[in-house]
Image (cartoon, rainbow, N blue to C red):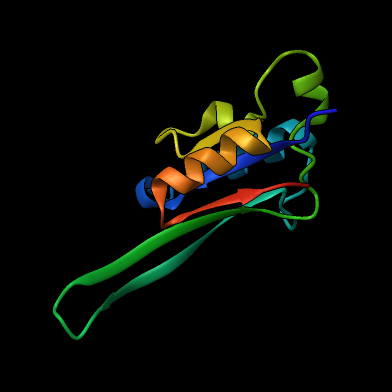
Length: 111
């Protein structure tokens, strides 16, 4: 059986929280819990004058990559709703290949 994963590209995440809301609605998760969470690494200036400001989306222990949706041939809700297309659902090998090409500001999640 092929293991699936979620590839997360942090470079273009705008912090819109669409993935959080989509997950919450799909899974019926209450306001005090998260299946997908977006954190903000607030702006700060480096010694060279460049700025750092990232949004970091990550699946929590409640994430099962929307197993019910995937079984119906649909994408996980976070992937479907990501406005910046930072999330990709695929096999571990596909996601690893994307990570290798990207090099930085990216991660793979496997439940």
